[in-house]
Image 1 (cartoon, rainbow, N blue to C red):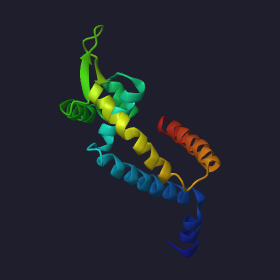
Image 2 (image 1 turned 180 degrees about the horizontal axis):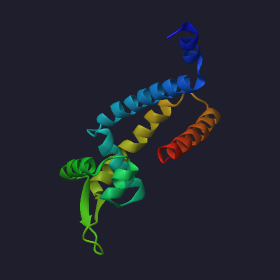
Image 3 (image 1 turned 180 degrees about the vertical axis):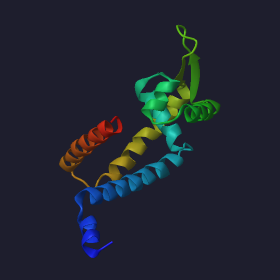
Length: 154
């Protein structure tokens, strides 16, 4: 590769944005995961409980779609959370093929205890930006994500 081509690549805004966004996402994700494990939960367990806590009971397949897990993975996560007493399965009365996950009283108690502290941690991770910059970043990253989503469908 000649020097001009390499220099153009290094200065390319698309490539630079991709690298910066990827590194920032990885670092922020690592920080959030480190916080989650303090509570004895892995990230997918935490995300599942958080979804059920805020949105109520959900069909198992919808949980997988919402937190980006395969059906095999969601079964594993639900099994683990059920063993810990944080959720229970409920068969649909209308369709025997559908099973719901519902957070238990113990699961609600856990999330009620840890979520405010977790929220503070996330707020601290994001303190590098002003509120206005956060709003701007949300708009821009969402716009980028929606555009990328369209490309997947082509």
